[in-house]
Image 1: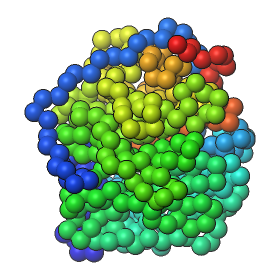
Image 2 (image 1 turned 120 degrees about the vertical axis):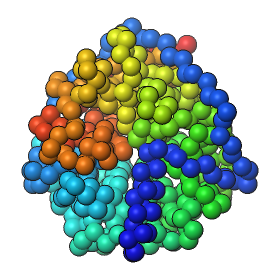
Image 3 (image 1 turned 135 degrees about the vertical axis):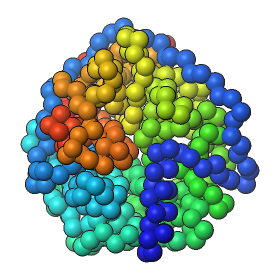
Length: 455
């Protein structure tokens, strides 16, 4: 790829987190809002049902290099099996041009981890695991070295990520390849979304499906020559898939894919008030068969208005993605410091408890050092508990060892890892600079097991 084209790729990659280009979608034009409403806080749940089980450092063979953009998945029925992946930055002054892929596996619930270094170079790992232990990992890039090219690679493991099959499925795409991947799985089915560039550097959201075999393209949400952004889809218990798409300063939509007739619905409006994202937006569905909120879908993002953060926002759908609530802020801190919210993540356990994590600077009076925070909702997103500080040590990512990595990944990546475990607790995975450069840390948040508060 020519140098000028590489520059375009890097610009577009930055815009994934800024959500910075208006688009055409599904045949109608979207205009920037002339004014956007302020968002009110959710109700406060005064209970405290969260217990932190400490922090565990995940040791990498790349012991002196930053690791960023971690992703994590849990075995649906075995609380001991966890799989993760992250980008290893091999040149801290050129983080967008020097990342390689590593994956990790824990067989004891997150206490000890084993690493597999993959000789693949590029961006954006994502990982998901099914009930039989089959694990899928996606990656944008090339084997052997960084080649300024971004095909989609899909890796497969049949044993929870302990080992990986030698054959990697490859999608070259169109134009300049892809930007971003998101994977979800339910039972034996996996879905993958990605942004695929077309010949004129516009980008469409593409949905791929796997029912035990290779992934096949099953749907496209067209940007009609403009730039779309996206986050992970959400699989419902009836097999339908909610596929989000969004753009800067205008709207967020959800399309619903029906696997029986391979159709994608019209655009259902999620929000007219997305503002500018700090990190990827995230989506999750409640698939607990006995949950009072089964098939609720939740859309979360950390947002900002210019340089001023506006907190962590949540929209909820109670009818499978066809209509959505007005967004509410869920970062219910007691202190009056301004929000520094970044890289929000969401997961839902089998009891219907929503868990949301993010990075913020609420513990540091100067608000230069960051911590990871976590909160839960037991009533389908109507109320949340006070945020739990997960990191016992605050850290400022702007260090000599992080160099330009801190500029590109101030929150430790454009996303961090969060998953619900088989025991209904939550597992967090993040990039932490408490020792001077980004290293992986993980923690289990135990949730008090009791009946949910249902109206």
